[in-house]
Image (tube, rainbow, N blue to C red; front, side):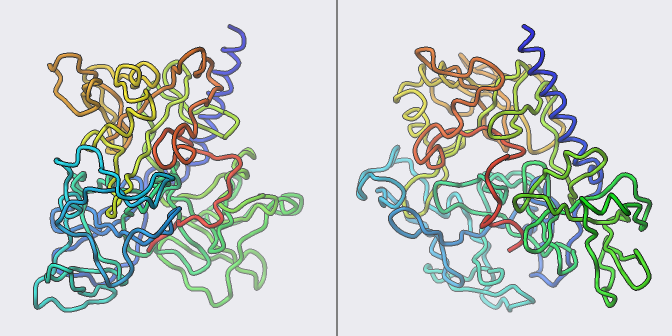
Length: 460
């Protein structure tokens, strides 16, 4: 019991630290560069990915960039949309050791690429505007493209601000050529960039190194001097630098200008060991900088420390996992949501047996009527026999918590192998390709070991 008490004290401290590092950007939303766009299109500020382009109904627009997979390439190149209306029936062999030509699961009901990803069509007489162009589809129709990338909507998105088709935060779509929401340029000076993380839209320097603010400063005035400067380096601005949106400059010393964001002076932490680091926020009164923060998990969840970093735990402190899956067809359909075939998940979590799957990886149950108050977290009723969405009064229906409209799980395991205490993360990387192709991963808010070097982050 004393061990568990200590774990929960550590978890509470970790959660407090995570919330404090977001404290300065809890309310504002991310500013963006206004630019011409086609008639009917708009910018919607999503909870996870900040400002995103959307059609007239508010549905987010996505790109599908080509990606090198294990045995071949999938996705699109600029100017050449390939998502079509004919369903694929066989796998490609690009993602796994399995050879190409195998019949896909539930093939008779498999949707076409355009059923899941309706193209953002342009009229026959549409003209380019700004960074928007018109490209020719294989079916002869016209499609809007941004910076050359053909634009699509996701059949999963229902409300303005939904990014259920994909997200730019690290860890999405590891196994295949995923789709990503596309948005306008963040309104930041040229020295800075913005990246999507589980904690929020993290601001870094253009080269990826994190920036920080200090509680001891005043508005547009730095009080970090003398010994403070042994650990922190002011992010300086050129004398000719021009304020941009929420960014200002102030004279730190005669002839020396420093950047400030929302009135708070900005610093580097030279001892950070990797780009995108959150390490500096471990120092009391110092914080990473976000344009906006992600919604907090529902009541009863908390962050906790594990060997891979700060991950989400349920009401009992046990690690919470999300399921990741993309199939191996030409159009790389996601198989991680209740609307997709469940055979992939049943295979990796229960050897094809739904009952064993529900036993080894139980859903995280939600109280009836529970609400999260945001679009990122929610609930749904699931039939554990099929893994599909159902209704409240259906036999055996479970009311479960969801992240991005996908159920979440804990790991009970089998034959004594499973999570037994709050520090366990035994299913992190469970499945094919370390869980990235078809498997499970902990919901990591702060990854201790992996560098952000090479991540996609930022605007397209």
